[in-house]
Length: 128
Ligand code: SF4
Ligand SMILES: [Zn+2]
Image (cartoon, rainbow, N blue to C red; front, side, top):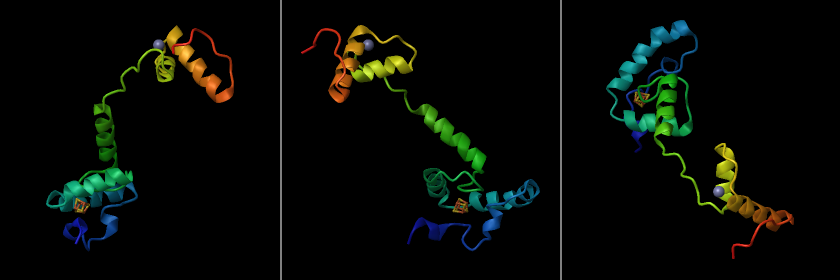
């Protein structure tokens, strides 16, 4: 038995949750939201919709656009990647991406990487 068996919307017409025109939405969505309000598996349903990237219709009590807002909000809570060490290729890439002129140590690391992978010229002193 899965959580789907406990869904309030079991047996209800799918069109109540996925409606096309704006007029239909205004008429049908209150019914969909009412079903979700009393649903015991609402949170599982919402998480599944988010996992599946489903941003249409009502799922887990939220409209597609409301889920999009929630997804954006969750993403904003993920901490940005910290700056890697200088003297590394990832440091070089980070500096470029973040609008800095790459420092000498990072440029050297990048050149070393390119030399290894493409046979390019290596600048700067060896670090090992
Ligand atoms: S939350 Fe709504 S869409 Fe999800 S299972 Fe329950 S009734 Fe169905
Ligand atoms: Zn650097």
